[in-house]
Image 1 (cartoon, rainbow, N blue to C red):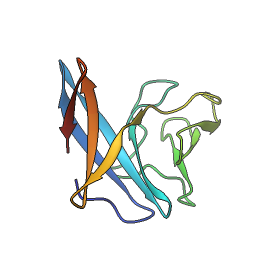
Image 2: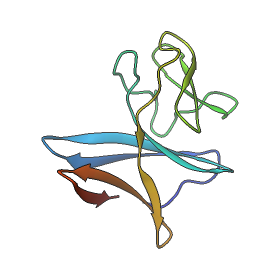
Image 3: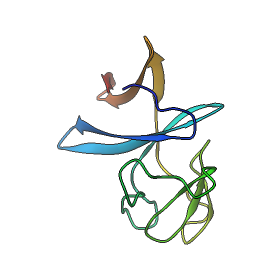
Image 4: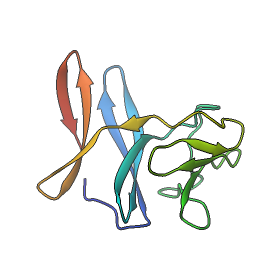
Length: 113
């Protein structure tokens, strides 16, 4: 996938095993971070609208359901009912100017995006 610009997010869906993976990438001045689009408290999607995952100040990931705030760099919840828990990070790498999510399946890596 093409990397989002700094301060922006990009959603993605990947086929995986019996279902799929819904995730998103956040771009900051220090890098790109990928997470499952799932709140650790309820399992609900984090965004209200497509590609809208950040709080008003664009410095934290915010759960649209109950307002929990997560650090972008590690997905750790700093405020809300899931305080102390974290978003599930997805392995991310660059390849020829594109972001690639690498999922491990039966000790064999599948590259997607």
